Image 1: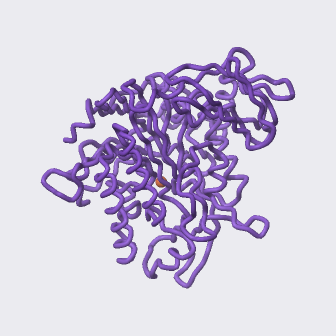
Image 2 (image 1 turned 30 degrees about the vertical axis):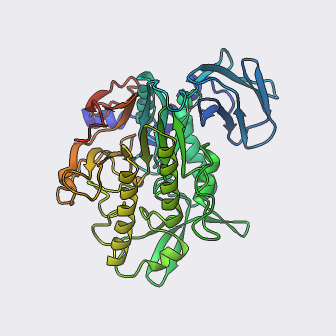
Image 3 (image 1 turned 90 degrees about the vertical axis):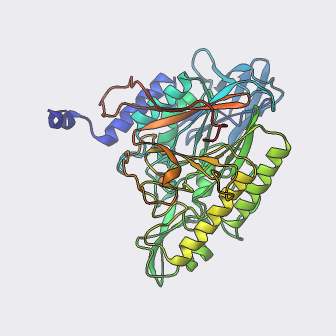
Amino acid sequence: MEHVCRRMRPSVGLRVVMLVALVGVACGQSIPGLEGPFVANVTDSSAVIWWGGPTAAAGRVDIGEWTARGEQAPYELLVPDLQPNTQYSYSLTLDSGVRLPAEGTYTFKTAPRPGGSDEFAFAILSDSRGSEPAEPVNAQALSALLGDAKARGARFVCFPGDMVFGYCRDEETYREQMRAWKAVAAPLMHEMPVYTTMGNHDVLVHLARDRFGEYDLDGVGQGGEELYGEEVFSSEFVNPPNGPKLPEKPGAPSYRETCFSFDFGNAHFVFLNTNYWAATRVYPYLPGDPCRLYEVGNPEGRVMERQINWLGSDLKRARAAASEHLFVFAHEPAFPVSHHIDDAMYYWGNATASLKQDVRRRRDRFWSLLSQYGVLAAFFGDEHNYSRSLIGASGSAEYDPAVWHVITGGAGAPPSAEFHPHVPWSDAVRAFHSRNHYCLVKVRGRRVALEVWALPEAERPGDDDLQTELIDRVRDLTIRD
Ligand SMILES: [Fe+2]
């Protein structure tokens, strides 16, 4: 019977197109190739309204009495002088006369005042790719999870990577896949920011070769110059531009909008790009010293010098500004427990001794910084399941206070039930689930609650009304036990 049902289902590629089309109709999107308007970088006194896509054109944004024009790409308007924790309505009118939305308005809400005690919630999810290249995004799962997060009161979404199937070798395919992602997320993006950074799939690569063999290297040739994945990614999304000012080396990619931080109420949020300047050697890593990759690219999970220094100074600033809660987001887990123990920030298996030592030394420095500045929780993706660990303290002076390490790679990528009990931190794992899910964090003054909502275990083709189920809950993360 199951076999018959599967045969009757539309192809995966067709399913994506159908879902994207449905989302487009539902959100009133009527211009092919136009994205938005979306809201981004919301603070207590400002917001960015932006629109894009291949057919984007000049237009005017109206918010009450305030109005401003976007004359040329990138169409990003900074809306100033807003009040904290206040809801605003807006619309975009293109010069052609087309108004978005066609009727009524979109709304967004500004952030609470910094340091105040206003309550708010935010969602974290990652890894929304489909199960094959023809399905760049698992539209059904991503759409259901984002809709649920919004319904449960999320004010913004954090998405640390593996948005699409990716591993693209040309710019247009990469942009098409990112546009497919945004078409699914559009109903949410019209009304709240979605902060993003890159995962290992979100790269634009060419096949390189050295004396040890072939490897994928960030960037494709474009008019005699290198066009890096970072550059295309940051032009497809709008994130804060306050990351490290310089690349790791002259000629290496910019960190702009893939590594950044922002404040929201009494909390501070930091995004890192742990797939910066990606150089992925085809497995196994042996034989061969990976040093060549360090010169022209960077193995995944290896956090380079400038980024880690920037992280240290950013966390220091946040602490000095008296941010109550600090949160960090990155794609590659510091302490993987599942199908990425062979890479991420661990490299358990086939890597050379020098790569293992180097990556782990950098991970230790990274985690020391989080502990030193009292980061409450760090959220990662990559592993297609949910795990919650408490890394540090309990008698050890190494990381005191401890920091929550949450892997939340469940936004639609094929779930994995693989769990490795032999990793040195397996005793620190408090929860593990292998269902598509997202995390909802509720900040209530000094207390911070975590809820994890999962989709039904069995796939239900054609069912767009998927009910989520609570699979993990911590009433107060600030009690680290
Ligand atoms: Fe990944």
